[in-house]
Length: 319
Ligand code: NAP
Ligand code: WDW
Image (cartoon, rainbow, N blue to C red; front, side, top):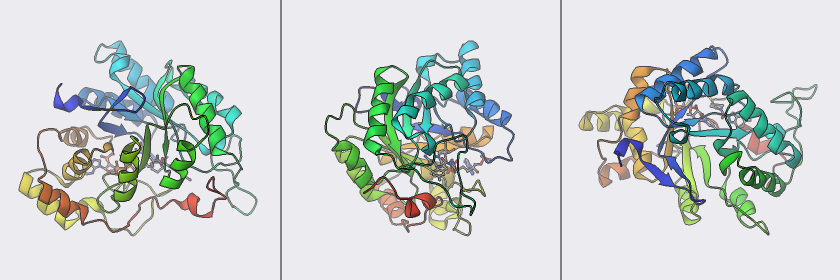
């Protein structure tokens, strides 16, 4: 098959395109930009699109997908669309209604992948980040295994072709994998992953369980004020990545994406800019040497742009 439409097998028999478009943009970016960007991305060649209920962009992204189907550029089955179950919907009885809400916004019949966005439950309700009068986030107690059983039912109902998780550590994954009567394993774990936080151990764990690791913030994120930690070094300004980019006559972004592909990782790249989307998609026609792979491995320095702000103080689903 054409290298640029490369996919990897998932443990449930489906497959996922190895490069995906990230669609999160901070709230100051007009929502209509997500429609425009998704259409351009599909024209550029992206077939995997990552969005979420949390991003409040599913109407816009869905509209773009439907419009590229309507104009004959792609068929529905060519597109791999991921949505995510937000933390306020982890109670089992809320899982299917939440997916149905996403599907209604999208105006699609199914999502290719539905993942638990984050392994902590928040108080159910309209508020995406419910807070008490002191401004503290209000958590909820939910058994993640019960959430997972509801996810399995969504797959059985055909509303999600595949199901997976995001932001889980190996212990949290084990909880699901060891669940008595488990029907479907998670197909993926989507986590922050880039040369400054390369997730070597989690990757090894996921590979041993036939779970695909999906990398977000693979370009070092940098976008937004709301979630991202400030005063971290900028990944794409890294001197080693820049020197390597020069050597291959590529850009640091292309080197960072290619690095993940060669590790067997499915990688997301967010851009709403046509030129940068084309650049990000141009990663199937060169190869990093194993020495250069090793050099990038050594850039690991435990820098997390997202830093799991919630996971540290949550009465999380771990105990
Ligand atoms: P990212 O993909 O690492 O980086 C995006 C930033 O890099 C944007 O500012 C973009 O700006 C810029 N950029 C893109 N291509 C570039 C290039 N070739 N050269 C220079 N700059 C470039 O960050 P992200 O959006 O945080 O992560 C990607 C996606 O992962 C998200 O959109 C979302 O879908 C997903 N995600 C999931 C979670 C989760 O909890 N599961 C968390 C974070 C992200 P322009 O748009 O201006 O090009
Ligand atoms: C947990 C997990 C917030 C936000 C968020 C909490 C989360 C995201 C950039 C891209 C998320 C940052 C998209 C926000 C408490 N994940 N994004 O996916």
